[in-house]
Amino acid sequence: MERPLEPAAFLQSVTFDMRRGLSLEAIAASIRNQGLCILKSVLAPDGALEIHDRFNGWYESAKDDNGDGKNDRVLQSALTLPNFPGLADRFIAFLAASRFPDIGRHYFSCATGNLVIPENHVLLRVLSDYTHSLLVRRSSRRHNFHLDYPLIPHSFPMNVWIPLTKIDQDCRGLSFLLPYTESIYDLPLDIDGIMAATNGYVVTPEAEVGDMFLFTHKTLHGVFFTPEKTRPRLSIEFRVGPADMLPADYRDVLYRL
Image (cartoon, rainbow, N blue to C red):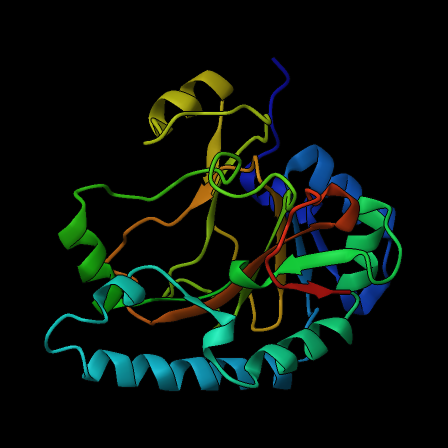
C-alpha cells in the first residue's frame, strides 16, 4: 500500500490561497483525488462576519431562553438558513460574489445558473461548551464522525463548510479521517479500525473566518467532543450539485449560481 502523506504535508497539498491566483482544475483534482480542498480567503470577511453576528445573536438568545429545554434539539444540531429572514439573500449574494461559483461549475462541468444548493441543506451550527454538554448528555461517544453518502440526496455530492469563527487550538474545528478511499462505512464508525486498515490519520485544519472547506459526500469527517477547547465555534455549511443530477420530481427550493 502506498504510504499516505504526513498530516502537515497533506494539508499543504490541499490548501489553496485565493489571493495567489486560481487553478480551477487543481482545486477540482484535490477534491476528486484527496476528498478535500481548503480554500483560503474565499468569502469577504465583512460578509462572513455579518452572518456570524446574526447567528450568534440568535444563539445567545436561544441559550438564555432554554430553561425548559425547548431549544435543545436545535442547539445540538443545526438551524436552516431560511429561519433568518433576509439573511439567505445576503449569504447567497456573498457567495455569488466570490470565486466559489466558478469552482463549483468547473468541478461539475455545468453552466451558469445550473449549480444548485438546496435551501433545506444550508445549515448554521454552533459548537460550544453548552452544546457540547447537550451532545454528551445524549451520547457517550467521543466523536460524531460520519460520511454524508447515506444521509443526504445523491444529487448534491459536494459539501461546503465555512467557519464563521477563527479555528485554532482554542476552538474545535472540523476533522477529517484520511486518506480518502471513497469506501462506504456503516455507522457508528470504528475510527481505530479504519485507521489501522488504511494507515490513516486525522487532521483538524486551522482556519480563518471566510475560508472554505470543500469535500465529497464520501469524505469521512466529524468533530471530536473535546471539552478542553472552550471558544464557541460558529459555522455555515451546505450541499451543492449540478441541476442535471436532480430527479424530475424534485420540489425543494433551490438557490442557483
